[in-house]
Length: 127
Image (cartoon, rainbow, N blue to C red):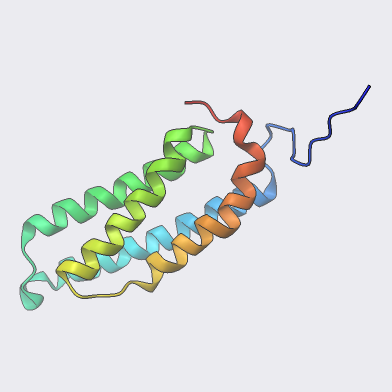
């Protein structure tokens, strides 16, 4: 009989790599929120409409919720986080002509380190 080998961690316990990857994603997400708050404080000087901040802060909150969903092994968080991150990046780029390196770094962390920590735990994620 052939024995099936698994190269992934089969323990549902959240390891240090998983926690550190989510902490790095949360750190850069909070840095993006800080940029949004700074722009809000200067919105009259920069002529940014109020509706923009309702939208961008909603995206910020949903990104943090997505990270919490990933922590609790929910697949919807894995799919919504990068979509919201790209939406955040493009909103800044289109409406304010700002290139956010925090969003680019966050996307790199998600696809690089985040996936290295998430993919081995995939079978523990629920819909």
